Image (tube, rainbow, N blue to C red; front, side, top):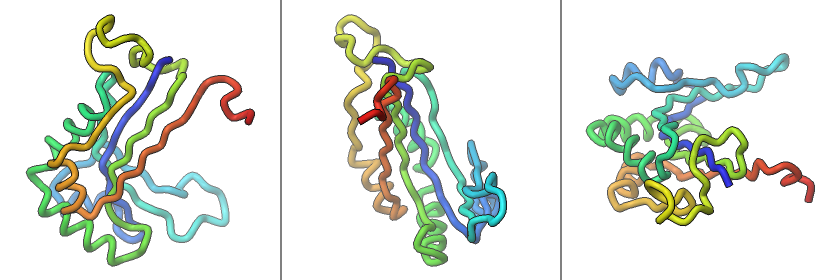
Length: 160
């Protein structure tokens, strides 16, 4: 089974734009988006602005992807925590999230076969992951939620 996966840490707000978040933090995001920006009329009110630091490196375990993100953000934890608190006060949909997205049986997956025994491949089996104490402390300090999305992309997977 091929797996595609990525992780990101994001801040969201219906009021504060990603550019404003970047200016406050002094950190340029890897990605920005505005949920609802592609919708026709009537537009959702209010749209959500997202500021994201992302790791989409193939053949990395979720642990490694999160570690990569945390290495970039850890020096800024106080500023991120302060901004996350400010955003959370704006609206109940605002705040911080650590998002993990995994797609199983993805024909376009770049990552190795997850069912291959580890001794037959270089690197880690991609099926398991965990959050270490430093990541949990970061999530606590920033009041971030953990959101894990997993999709089965096999043909007929949605036919139940």
